[in-house]
Amino acid sequence: MCGIAGFLLRDGLASAAAVEAMCDTIRHRGPDDAGVYTAGGCGIGMRRLSIIDLSTGHQPISNEDGSLWIVFNGEIYNYQELRRDMLARGHRFSTNSDTETILHLYEEYGVESFSRLRGMFAFAIWDSRQRELVLARDRFGKKPLYYADTPAGLYFGSELKCLRAAGVPLEFDSEAIRLFFLLWYIPEPFSAYRAIRKLAPGSWMRHRADGTVAQGQFWKLPPFTDRPQPGGLSEDETARRVRELFDESVRIRMMADVPLGAFLSGGIDSSSVVASMALQSPEPVKTFSIGFEEADFSELPYAAAVAKKYHTDHHEIVVRPDSVELVSRLVRQFDEPFGDSSAIPTFIVSEFARREVKVALSGDGGDELFGGYRSIARVDKYRFADALPQWFRRGLRLAADRLPYKAYGKNYLLMLSRPTAMERYFALNYPPYYLRKSLLLPEWMLPADAAYLAAALPHCFTPEGDILSRTMYFEATANLTGDMLVKVDRMSMANSLEVRCPLLDHKLAELASTIPNGWKLRDGRGKQILLRAVGDRLDPSLVNRPKMGFAVPLRHWFRSSLRSFLWDHLTSATFTQRGIAHPQFVRALLEEHQSGRRDNSMFLWMLLVLELWFRQVDEERGSSCESGAPVGF
Image (cartoon, helix red, strand yellow):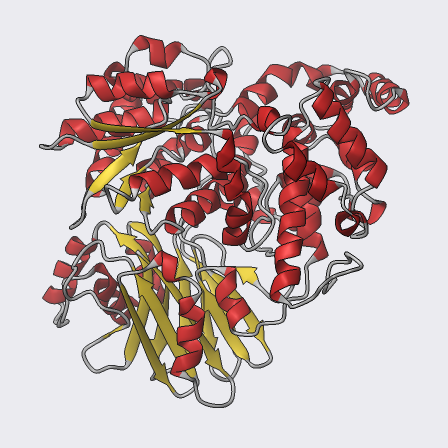
């Protein structure tokens, strides 16, 4: 596990010092080792967190004749099998690393080789013969990879701060900020800066020294299905296959030459991962759980029950309100606005686990692939709205428009009035239209949500299947990559901890895409086929309890320990003069939240992290920003 960075200049020679400067910004991703290679206008470098092949895995790594060089971030779980194949074909290896295996595989098969890799990865290969730099990223985008194609050349890095260190232009992307107000994060391929983009998951880019660019995709998540496949497996057979693939996915991710453990939230997914690890490990599994002083937000008792059942070496930590002092630090780690407040406990549990282990397995991916989110159940619940006549919908919209903002039910009526089920999905699960309309100045409002997003993010939409298929596809291609995996990667790597996700093994994901929605979601409860597969390993009290999610007691903190911090930032002249939000409505949100009439914590958090990000950018640019106006729009 590493951080990588580099560039290919159109003119001039690459400087090793310039590559080192880019890599130094991500030292947290790889504190164990560093390396740089330059040739002509190409410079590539890495920071390494040593997990396997501790003694000979130094990067960059070359092939036999030095014509190919690679820097790699990730883990390839089937590399031993691929290595044997390459040896049989006459390739010679100088290390025992998965990194070198990728290089020889590319030498043999070119970009077609990427589909043979099973794991998580982002890498850059310099081909001196063709004078081209090739970038590639894993199927779900577990490992990040940013790039900027500028007049000077191509720049890339594991985090935005790498490209900032290289002097890439940092003009803000206003469309990306508008997307943040709708989704809580900035989705692929956008970044907060116009010049910088994120390489799409499951894709590659070839950039030649003359500026010629080619791109391709080696994998795409198959559409989900709403009906059994003709001649396919029965439900019982499917459950058995899920169990087999799940255990295999866990087993191959337990490969490491360093201490390894697991995050244990007490939910179905992480508990199932821990159970599988315990059943396949000769030693007690190290588990790490986090809880809160506020009992209604803490899952520690459930996690402790799983730990007791499987005799794990269990560790717990409680997050207290003073932990929110981390906020500014976390905002800096993301490099762009990121509104998921569960980044706080993710950082703390990563920091906690890193005291004992270098690698942790997590349960991420189960909700997206097996229909576990409440957002998906809500869409199913309101299918009846499909039958409402258009004249009735128009009446509901008119009534919603006329109700005052503070009236309860205003957003509910708007949701029912939406013309399509996909529009209802966005109305149900994202910042409400009326809130955004009242909060934001007109230029920061997006057009109709689903129609706009389908045009802006076409890779996240599929016309196939029913509404559950389409919403699950969006969750698995937009929210998973743009929110969940970003959160886990940045917060874990900030603590030099590698996190692996068995439920996001691509073979398991491809199987999940063929499973009918009715086998996943029944009576408003998701993940039914997953429970049929591995639920016998869990206590009924855990299986049958309502889903909590990784929620944070922000509503309490914003009324107590974080109140002054929140109000000082969102009522400041600096924030007011940015020209994004209506000051009177921001104050109304603050007062309404403080009174307890409504829980506005999610929207207030979104505004807070945006303002903190702006201030950090102002500081880095050396601007006093006395006017408060964002630089670079």
